Image (cartoon, rainbow, N blue to C red; front, top):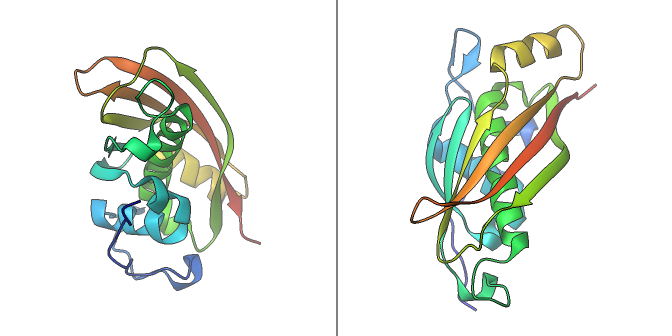
Length: 177
């Protein structure tokens, strides 16, 4: 099997050693490379499946899973577990991007996930993830001492644009006290 290589993340020791993140209007400015490096540095499994991080803006992420034979199922497409993992990783990219400035005080955790496989996937696929509620509302709930929960909706599409799966991941920000 071909080894995957990723650049070393700028930080990999976890939230305790986060670099300075510029803050504007109470939100961290986080670029695509920072989100990619955070996920590949903190979540080794992400390096195993090897998604490509294509786009990121607060509340949205787009990832692509290259077509790799070792990740195929019995009918020659991406295994259902790969589709699930790609969608969960895309949702994590949204969460890290939206709440990286909160990592020193809270840990993001997936609470639940629901996936529906709609059509056969073949070749490379993309996953687009969208935050279900304004990030400012989640931050405010955390600041008020709560443990906010929120959904990230993900659609997975083939290269021809056909949707092959949809997933909703419920996340929480657990205070680090």
